[in-house]
Amino acid sequence: MHNKWESYVMYHKPKELKKFWVEFYKDKHDSKVLFFLGKGFDPRMNNVLELLLSSVQGLRIDCITFDFPDGDDDHKEKKKLYKLNVQHLKELQVQYGFVVRDIPVDSKLIWDKRISKMSLEILNMDFSGYNDIILDASSLPRSFYFNIAKSLYRKLKDDKTKNMFFAVSENWKIDEKIKKNISNESIEPLVGFKAMSNRESVLDRVNILIPLMGEHNLAILNRIYNHFQPSDMFPVLPFPSKNPRRSDNLMQEYHEFFSDHHLTSAQNFTYADEQNPFELYRKILNLMKGHNDTLKPISDHVCFGIALLTSKLLSMGALLVGIEHNDSVAIYNVSSTSYEIDDAFEFEELNKESEPFLLWITGEAYNEN
Image 1 (cartoon, rainbow, N blue to C red):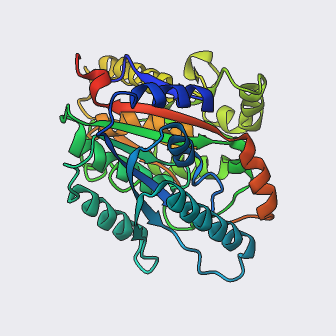
Image 2 (tube, rainbow, N blue to C red; image 1 turned 45 degrees about the vertical axis):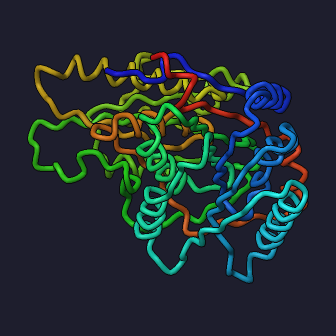
């Protein structure tokens, strides 16, 4: 099984990113960057962009935002954060003199239509004037940034003249405090990541579920399991972790679920560094290869369902698997109908602990391969 990112490039922490960007653009005075970000209430919205602009003096950059305005007057704290984020972006624009183009997300359309419309718009964009493309997922819903990333990858994977990066400002405390109102609609894989969804009639199809474990998602995991109906399941636990006991705590939280589904052997569980999506990518691919080899005598149709129950950063590991093996991977993420927060000021304070990550996806770092 092909492993495009067996060797990879990733930068983490402000000092490391700042050093990389200073060196990277030192002799590239004519370079131009196209920066994508989500425009919403998440306080991490401008973190990566601001770090980039402050690192490279005179950088030529255009910014495209996917605008998620909140029209619900009852969510005052969320609207407060949205306005603060938009104001901060305007201040950065005045300070550094870059262009911002908004792509409004039409809330009147159903999710699938919104995503399809947005993906088509990206595929039709002209990137000829840019050297580097950066997608910042910090304030984008997974269903959106997965498909934005897929569209960008389709356009740029064979273009050796451009570099593509995925970025995220990681903060598990913020993620935990965003209250999600889960849709009661039937569970389906993400738009654009529905491998074999129209092949139920294939008699020898085998489903393998790979849930990326995170806290407080038992009900969601049950719904995904019942929809996907796997023949076997191999959960991935975060280790090493900032909390050394996190994997143990997750095992305890999901103990009854694991027992009910006969997951009693250590061989059923995989561990991946909670801050390294490339490592998760490799481990999932190794797991997929092992099952494809084992199941080859009985089936040519093995579908791997990846359940996103973990952080936005680790979810990027699943994204890499999904865009590279789109024909055999179905990715599950239960979309929220809305989000709620209790205190905008608390979120602003928590954002001071956010950590930036930059994943180099295509371009000159891989041109020798």
